[in-house]
Image 1 (tube, rainbow, N blue to C red):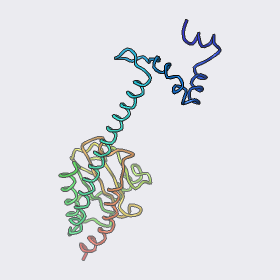
Image 2 (cartoon, one colour; image 1 turned 90 degrees about the vertical axis):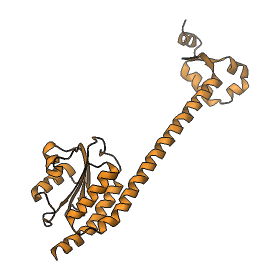
Image 3 (cartoon, rainbow, N blue to C red; image 1 turned 135 degrees about the vertical axis):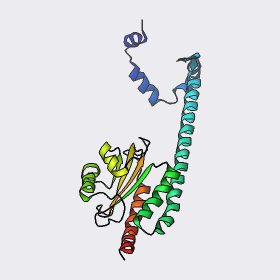
Image 4 (cartoon, one colour; image 1 turned 180 degrees about the horizontal axis):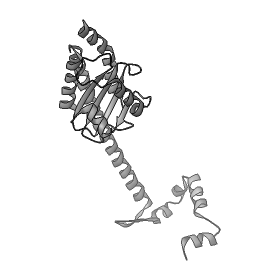
Length: 227
């Protein structure tokens, strides 16, 4: 005869027993002898008492929390490192004399310190002094097909898109960031050889701040170049 059959014959079911015990947390305080007799199946030890089972679950929970805290500290440390890289980059960008130098400065820093394999600054069609500027219609196509009204795109590009933006650089994921309120100043593109480096859902605060900084800096550089 199974336990369920015995419960049915006694006009009881497991849910009613569970409700009864949940409503009376002091039940086992009044039935200490029963608490000591009850045993639970255990994969390694055969069976354990309720107290032992609860202690083991608490130990597992503590271990899981410790691992979670360690992971959070690791992520926080990496985020701080990335933030400092960008913070140190800003003064050097401010010292750049033209758009080409600006692109080279960003590319060198991000390749060496953040494993970014390619950096591309694509100016608006009005600003053509930067080598390899994309024609206006290609830039608009990127906005339309990849950005879809968003300020930032994170993910992969097609083969032709990668070739136009990054040339022969190894790029398996990328970040595209509009420059200016509606992308009127151009596009900033980062490429990584890691297919999961730039992915949908990741935080974009730091690269948005960089785009805002460039939007303030670009008009000065263009004006100096046209003087």
